[in-house]
Image (tube, rainbow, N blue to C red; front, side):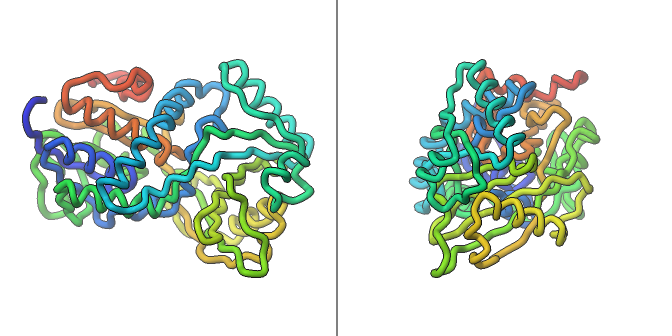
Length: 370
């Protein structure tokens, strides 16, 4: 599309805010529709940028897409800081994947072998070598993998910067909930936002906004704790530390000033966002195996978010029909895939081809109209 395009972005999480900022900065009129921008799952997220540590056999297309986006993150973060005047929240310390029992260590060995087969190298570590890198880790940790290329981001710093950058670029915020998206219009409860192109980026709620998304996007609940080291406690690790712990995934993502994000459970229970006692118990019990000192930490917050998930764990990124773009279904990789998603939407608006790795996420993989 040539000239100025009137764009309505539905959804004010990390994906929607990033798209709105980049599209407005490119000279288009943008209105962002959300009843509570910078909240929801993006506000709860751990902020890992870890395509290598989260790689899984059968998800090679997702690994390639995530790797492309990871390479874009440093430049994206620098641009965001300049545009907003605020910290981007990017953390560059890297990631360690650790295991506790023999089954965990076997899982790490399988991951390392799988990555080696793809030409991606990680460093295998003994328990002693892991604790040399991160002295606060406990004796139950028997081995690990160092993944220096994987990064992390303080999700709340990033959201604040994105909202400021979007505002500075001229994005208009429409504080309302969308109920339907059609070519030329976003229908609200009692009014309509007219547009040339609508972009559906409403996370787990996207499935109700367009017929082609019905049954394609489902919510997966994740409970997350936020902790802070007290003066009497050992400081948190400087790197992101991930499980498995007795087969259950756990991650610990450091924040400034002694903060630590601990997550995350995974339950398919619809749109339930209540934090359960069992979820908190399991997170703390598993994290104590890795970092015994957290028993002395302050419990600052317990929250739950809804990952927008698809059957193949790939996001949905492309044209649903003329006048309607979709950028959703990022599951646990919303922050990771933000730069490549925003660039792809801007390219599609210009009539250009996005990065080759984006093709795997096109809704045409479902068949039917594109």
